[in-house]
Amino acid sequence: MDALFPTYARWDLTVESAEGAVIVDNTGKKYVDFVSGIAVCNLGHRHPAVTSAVEDQLKKYWHVSNLFKSDLQQEVAEKLVSYSDLDAVFFCNSGAEANEAALKLARKHTQKSKIITFKQSFHGRTFATMAATGQEKIHSGYGPLLQEFVYLPYNNCDALEREMDDTVAAVMVEVVQGEGGVVPGTEKFLKKIEELCSQHGALFIIDEVQTGIGRTGKAFAYQQFNLSPDIITLAKGLGSGLPVGAMLGKEKLKESFGPGSHGSTFGGNPISLAAAKATLSIIFEDEFLAEVEKKGEYLQAELTKALAEQDVVTEVRGSGLILGIVCKEEVAATITALRENGLLTLPAGTHVIRLLPPLTVTYEEIDEAVNIIKETLVGTYVK
Ligand code: PLP
Image (cartoon, rainbow, N blue to C red; front, side, top):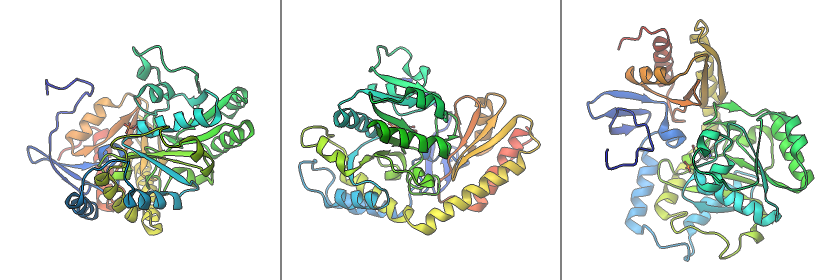
């Protein structure tokens, strides 16, 4: 471990194998995985359909470059387009790259530079996406940042009305703030962004990196509210664990992203796209998505019931299978205790336990997780 930059405060856990919603460590201990590689392994670990699609592609070719035509990219792009209100796809490798593409496109298309984002948002770690992220701790030490980003309070229509004018190139927003505390955006707020963007010639960009690909029970979270963004960005769940990101945009934006305007050597590489194609063929099915919604409601209801007596818990919130247990105290020690008791979870901010189970999680696994959470919080859990 000493040969790595210490950018991550790593857990004392080395994974030996993983399947579905279960991770086994190098001592043979089993964990129920409610992290899913941070909302990546939406089909659970090593889903057989994704495994076989990747194996097939490995036997054909691995990488050629985006100078060649790609039926695979066309197929995945058509699937993404047909499930959204958008018309064109740019493939890249990560969420930050998808957002980077969106921000560049917004400036180029509108010929304006001011971008509005929100406090406690998270959009990535590159210079542009770090600047877009409304959290000082992410900026710290890296100044001067890329200019002309304005951070407004989330879910606050008045602040937005005051700031919006014709100099704004784009508003970028998460439908549920993931890293910032699992905070769902209100319909009123999200609709207000759309309305003001269209009034002022700004692009409405939705960051679906964490909420997209079925996580909230819709193909994309914005579809809960019948919104019509100009751009959405994806990554995480798209490749089930193989790196791939995507920016989807409206037809009118194509002219601003012509040959030579933007690019990526690895973007949309065939192995990742084989995984993406298999992933979407399962997740973008009405029955699958309806089941995610049902499981999300079940998990939220069971947690609310189980934690009703816990003074430390103020709320269980979220959407579909991105849920947060909001606590009065810092949650770092609880997350360690949960892990020791066999359940992997994440913090979102300092006071929220974030739950991101695979969308394929079973009801038995949900029950087991709720039980571990309940017993851990009362401090009496014994395996
Ligand atoms: N946007 C959101 C909403 C995210 O949650 C993340 C990562 O957590 C990113 C962007 C950045 O994605 P990546 O880490 O793939 O660059």
